[in-house]
Length: 240
Image 1 (tube, rainbow, N blue to C red):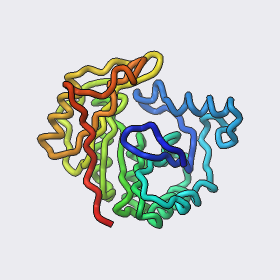
Image 2 (tube, rainbow, N blue to C red; image 1 turned 90 degrees about the vertical axis):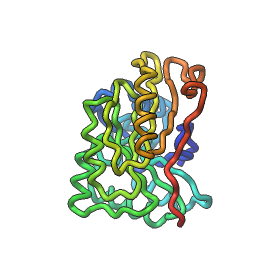
Image 3 (cartoon, rainbow, N blue to C red; image 1 turned 180 degrees about the horizontal axis):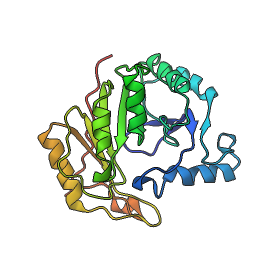
Image 4 (cartoon, rainbow, N blue to C red; image 1 turned 180 degrees about the vertical axis):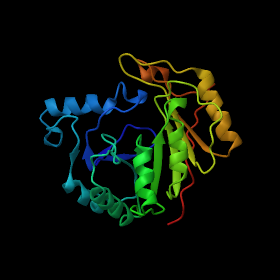
């Protein structure tokens, strides 16, 4: 586990690494760039670069964490990648269940795989497992409907990189929406009106709204103020 610079979490935990691109939001994948860098540095875990790899030894790590943490699961991969065996996914879920003092945040673009496993009764949801899907533009709004059908206790959307408007979102059953612009060398622009529209939709539906960043080539300079204010709302944590 490593401390994270991602604003909506505290730590990252990667029982799998590597992935492949399946939608528009993947175009400038930060994890792919980071994996190549770590491989070049000789980090053993990334010896395969950004090819999918499963790390059984990582499953023991959460048991050693003493203080309660907000943990982003697989910042460098997608737990519901088609080549991750369901048996390994179930092991990850067992670890999360056995460490209820932590909140584990999972994010996927493969909502169809997620729902399939859920419908088959293969996933054991506990209060501390938050499940999210990426929704970068309206082409992928169907992922929200798939997420909504799961038995996850807390459901969230990551609209990052937001590369198009998301009008008329169905936020029924959704607890949290994260919005962020793309960063990097050639970021695609994000319009202010897209962000404001999502914020208003969240307000009307009583959904927590978290504005992560404007992005751009210098994301520190552009910051995360929206009309002069920060929006860093989080879902309410259930009492343990």
